[in-house]
Image (cartoon, one colour):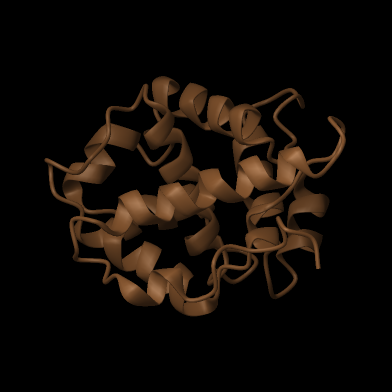
Amino acid sequence: MPLYSQTIPGVLDQVRPDSPRFIGVLLGEIQGFSRRFCQGTSDDERWSLVDCGLKETDWQKIRDWACRCSAADAPRADSRVAGTLLLLIGAAVSRSLEKDEPLWQMVTNACSDELRAALFGSNDYPVGDARDAFSDACESLGLRNQLDLPGRQQFFRHTYLLAAFLRGALAAVCLRS
């Protein structure tokens, strides 16, 4: 098994989503996985959030954190933290969607008012700075992506790609694209 194959097993079991340490631990694990992956592969190889070994309980903790995120914990939309969180929350929410549910509307519904204001403003679509941070996070972490495709749906398609989504959503996305 390659060194980069997964996060440290159970690391998120040790911290609750209401802990002030939760996001730091989660982001540290994602960044650590990215470093290990990029050191052990060629420049052309990319990874997906699914590759880092997060369990369903971890995805649930991400959703739990998002719904109770306070104003003090909400990142600036133009920060790499915001981009990484948008990826993680989007992937966590998309794992639970049926194929016809609107991704970004469901992500905004999963966020606290403070987090929603930071990442989405008053819309159901990420603000420009958050989309730029999303792209920056993908590039800096070496994530597999579809962000070079034209059009507004690139962030939607990419979030589903990262989540390795369930229940026929791939077919639905491909048919709509």
